[in-house]
Image 1: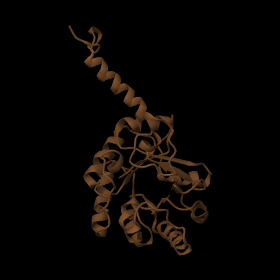
Image 2 (image 1 turned 135 degrees about the vertical axis):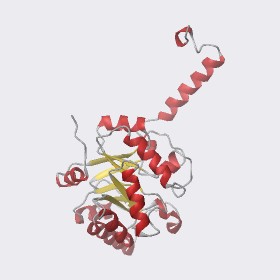
Image 3 (image 1 turned 90 degrees about the vertical axis):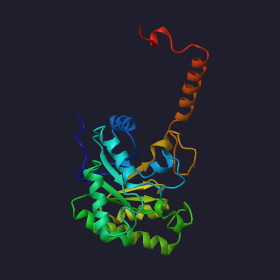
Image 4 (image 1 turned 180 degrees about the vertical axis):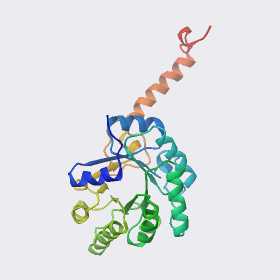
Amino acid sequence: MKSKKSVIDIQKMKADRDKITVLTSYDYPFTRIMDQCGIDMILVGDSAGVVVAGHETTLPVTLDEMLYHTRAVVRARPKALVVADMPFLSYQVDLREARLNAGRLVKEGGAEAVKLEGGAHLVDTIRAIVAMDIPVMAHIGLTPQSIHRMGGYRVQGKEEAQANQLLRDALAVEEAGAFAVVLEGIPQQLAQRITGELAIPTIGIGAGPHCDGQVLVIHDILGLCEKYAPKFVKKYADVTSVVTDAVTRYIAEVKGGEFPTQGHSFN
């Protein structure tokens, strides 16, 4: 039987050169399926705001919404490590609030680690949460909560100065105690350099093949999100067409009197 993954197991995978697989999940049924497939880590992402709730960005997502999605994921009792995103404004105000909100995601949500966006400027926050014995995954590069500062979803680290800052960010979050770091939307050569410099695992998304692991949004790989189609996404299935076919047939059968039949009725 597959054993429950811990942050120690995830870190050991880097040492063993065993690629780390991560997908987002926001509910019970998808979590059950991907966990049965053997996913290593499940990220309860604030991307739920875009792919589930229909917002244009992740910024409107609240802590209560993240708690709801995290609880739904945890009810599937996954063997994968469950990491919950800290949404915008849940950790940026002050250290006390950051600690409290991280604690709520663990205590009330059932998460086993939290993820927050930002580099060197957030080392005090990372240290404060880690000091509570809550594992922290960092996230640098293209950070969706910083979309207004970045001027949109743009690749980060193309310029030498910015690349050097991202390397400093990576080293800073590692030193602060992060157990892993997401590298999003950066050139693959920079991601390779950062991965080689760090002792903790790097999880790439739009950062090339040299990271210690990869993460994608489940709705993206299933073809369920039509809001955007970033270059780094690979669509592994077209679930939209499957759902469309089922709903179309249902409508036709109900209107045509073919459903429900006696076999679907009670006497």
